[in-house]
Amino acid sequence: MQLSLITICLLATRSATMNVIIGTNTSLRGAGESLADAYGDNKCRCIGIDNMKGYYAAQVDFHHVQYQAETGATCDTWDQGKNPACKATVPPQWCNQAWCYVDPCSCDIEKLATPTETGIVFQGKPAYWSYHTCGSTDFYGQTAKAAAATQGKDAFPDACVHQKSPDSCAQKSDCAWDGKKCGGKDIVEMCKGDAKKEESKFGEEDCRCVGLGGSGREVGKAFLHINDKDLVAYPATVGGSCEAWEDTTHPDCLKKDGERPAWCSDKWCFVDPCKCKTKVAPKAVMPANQFMRFQGKTAYWSYATCGSVDSWTSEHTDQYCPPQKTEEDCVKLDKCAWTGKECLGKALATICEKQESTGILGMESPLPSGAFSLAPLKALAVMLVAFAMV
Image (cartoon, rainbow, N blue to C red):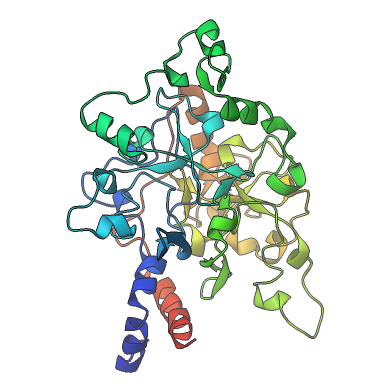
């Protein structure tokens, strides 16, 4: 199939949106770039689903701005060319600084992460962002802080992070000691309450949802394959919490006549395969979606962590690892590995164990240059034509 001139013209009318939708994080595929650096410091790793097709809209200084759905899932200069301030003749220094979203409860670097005020959430709390985990300097924020940073000074010598003992930490009313270091009281108290999160919304304690959600991403779309050919527009918050995401998106669930599949009402979310101890192991996304990554590994999802039964896999056995009962069938899927007894996603079979023992982020083979095959791009182009005509 080739796109006609008329189609190209239609797409051009929404070129900015199209660039956001199909734009991907080139930092993972650029020559000489280190994959080890792409997901931040090992003590404070980036979160969110990388390489997710789609966009979400935000209001920045009264300007309408569209960001990629994958924004913040890896270290990159996400504001460059998008944030209105970064389009100035002389843009602020922070425009050229890489950052990503992080989990403050799993971030053990000296410079504390900062909560976002954009309405984006992670596991029910404001998403936190960090320049420092990406090896960048945080020039963003108050003018005084930025000015001090350019001179190599600290604008806030009394900050919680500089209190090196429980006693000095306790002397600051807005600080709290977490057992290892002094941090903002709001973060410390929030993290102590992590185990009490509502499991029905954010997954079991040993298998939390890892997608980004919240009101800051509600205006937007994420495009996921439902089979080898068809893309479907999901909310940009997809996988950030336990929801029946297919219920209002999948064509089979939107039929007015006939019986709906059981999985239409089943809840699931994206999870970290290396931190998921559910009785039913999480599954790597279908091959058509395996360009999506979480911390360098194929993205995984779980119904079990949300208290649902997985009836989807039984109808799509050729797309997932566990249904493959022989090594020959297992290795036909690039994302799978044979353990000698069963077929599992590569992360579960080999990577997670080593990652846990070394503390160093383990990753699957990098995506090839031009990671998206022609077929998915054609399918997306067709969707964009319809989008452009709305």
